[in-house]
Length: 193
Image (cartoon, rainbow, N blue to C red; front, side, top):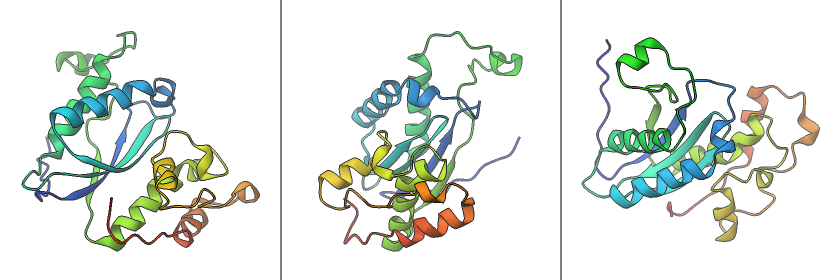
């Protein structure tokens, strides 16, 4: 088994991608109140600031800032995944190797994390999070995806409601070009909120 080493930066801000085991599932949006409730429970027990998030059908992206002196984001993700899984009825088939470990197999075991280095890196990841529903072809306008912190940024006046534009004319655009479109939609923040 691999021995993963995670960078520990107390009070750091991190970008995460967390995936369901079964890509193509719609579980996260079909049961949207469950990830919301799990995140709230984690935040109450192990505080953090959720700078941005988007919940997609089979994965989510989040930017999380930890309190000063705290670097334990793995604890928070483990607790989040556990709470989410426990909130679901056990109806899915479970592979034998997962049964032996007491796992249900809802989530992929690992997740992607990236330590945000500076304001520019934060802005790039913020844009990435908010633009993902378009990248995945779920909507043509960022504002049309309901499971995103984008709406909080609009409400507080940080982003305009039409941020990201209307991508309906770009149906045949490949992912690389859409990433260039996302780069052209940068916002500039004085500091993460």
